[in-house]
Length: 196
Image 1 (tube, rainbow, N blue to C red):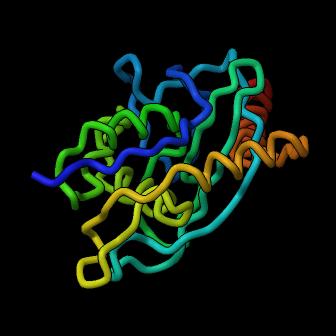
Image 2: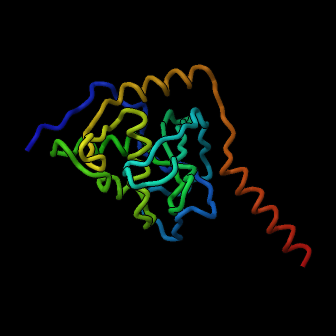
Image 3: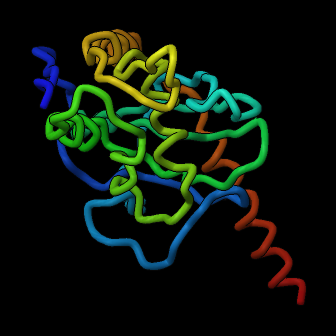
């Protein structure tokens, strides 16, 4: 067994439920176990960063879009996938970075696959773990092996922690397009219902 690479830089998060909004391409389940990607509308996440990345598998077509956010009242950092330029359902729920770090700290192998992230999601889409791993690779938290892109190794948490600290201090607050779209759909349903 290879020794697990651990980081000295703590991620500034604590375990919790994260806010989310539903979407038509979202893989969503009505029964979600506790401590997974559950909805918690009492907390809002301030979106610090919106980025794009290639998919983990070279066979994957189209880029992904992801966001990094923080709950200012609890100082919890999260990440979520928000877009897929090609087909494939996925969860748009926020995933706590501390939960990801906890999973990585338990890995004993030098290389592993994205499937280790599967338990972060209550949803059943097989794309969730791979798409999340793609965003984490873009942020340097993990890295792909050149000869086997779907085999990954631990990277460093420092870059993403530094990015979050800097963006937090600047006060950046990007619009939550997922919540805006969900509100528009809800309003449209209300109008349709009241007209009937």
